Length: 228
Image 1 (cartoon, rainbow, N blue to C red):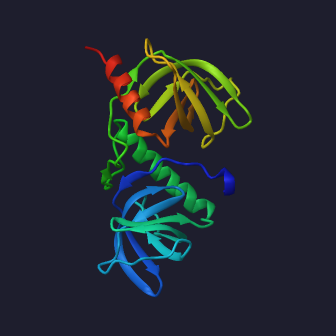
Image 2 (tube, rainbow, N blue to C red; image 1 turned 120 degrees about the horizontal axis):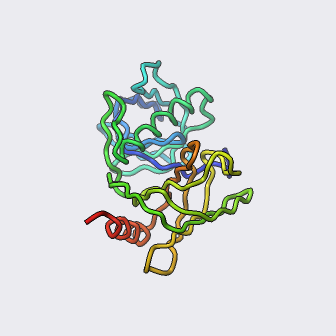
Image 3 (cartoon, rainbow, N blue to C red; image 1 turned 180 degrees about the vertical axis):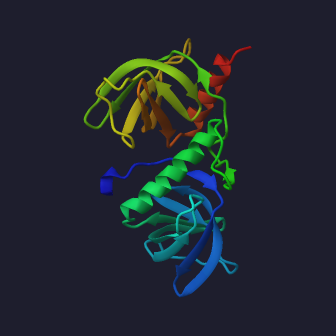
């Protein structure tokens, strides 16, 4: 999507994948996944692939469909895996990937993961309670959309806001800049976010690219709002 590629949250999950690169082919597992890319385990003899190298993948999803055949480019290699971006995936493949990742992200907020899928917590994203709270919040998006209102509930990794279907609101996948006002804790928390899901009377936003300080402030805020 060029500059419109969104920083979609990654989710840790272990799926079967077959990888072909530089004449080598191996069967491994995913480390984490988004609709735009994946990290896969290294082969028994680790490879050092140059950034931009082309890789072929056959990825099995738990939706009873056929495995996805994908082309990807290498972002980086490390001892814990090879990070890849998908290159021009078919629309149907992208939708299957997005549906799976969305369901896994929802399971981290307390829902049930898809049958037969093991969901791992990524290093920065841990399962956390979602607290009902009406806090002042605003966001700006590219159009631009400017909005001020109240939260419905909050976790350290996302927020639901009272943005109804009748409102002019950003599309799912749109990047936004959020300002969340914590009670008795100025200044506002400035966070990057993404529109994850639009519901009839609300919109759910996921926080992306969280820095350690931002994450700790959000965790402290959620803990302070939790019922005694």
